[in-house]
Length: 211
Image (spheres, one colour):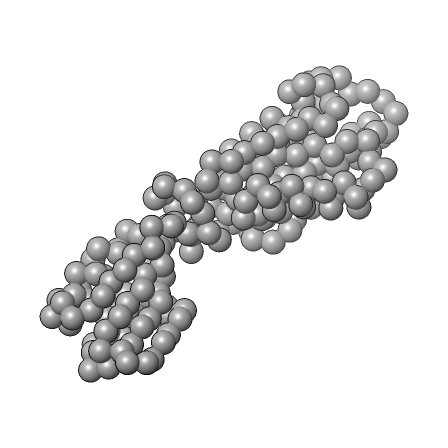
């Protein structure tokens, strides 16, 4: 889950799809929750929902991303009754990288602004309540380069800090690609430099991702 955000705060995301159906005076409100990586993915999912439920009266939504992108839509409902209510539900759970869509099939009876807003909010809240929530921490990719003689020392230190290796290259020297939580990068760097007598390259990618 890659982000360009400069924020170093942990985030809470949802894992997997959840759905909750809410009925009010003949109208059916289907709240759906999707994990997303960015606004482009949110728009693609939303297009798919609109295509699948093409005969629905409204497709209201809200999404929020870790890089600060967020958007909501009433999709024809009275202003303030739908989209902002869905965004408020997302904020209630302090979630990020999430899209909430509520699909409404009109049942023939107008609900009024208050009850309508409540119906959208409850649809989103119940769907989000059922979602599995996971905390992710800011991290960065780091490229390490060192001699073969230092393999055991480097691998031991990485294991001590529970750092996983996601790329290796053994040629004239050893090159490793690892992902390290941002909060311990300097600590790990100091430990590796010390253990290898400064005979190790430690190159940090500035881009932030969450693990």
